[in-house]
Image 1: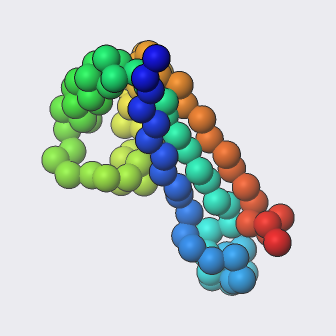
Image 2: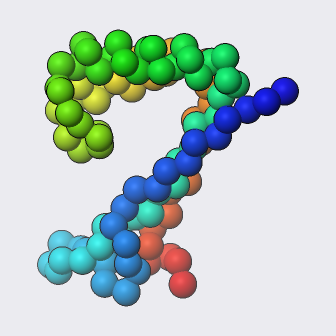
Length: 97
């Protein structure tokens, strides 16, 4: 059975200077996420995602940070309906190295 895997990372680069309450720097967490789907589910997923984008109403956005709380909740609920699997690994950078 064929599957497609899409992987993305989140977090600013760098582990030598990490942001905290008192100093600036890179984000304190590194996130690696993936979605795994069969090719037939991918077509359905693209349609659901496009419908969600239309409902959200923002013309251009690439990152969830550009959405408000209600928009993020709506998008998460819509994506939860998809016949796909989501995976994520979150690591606190201070623990790396």
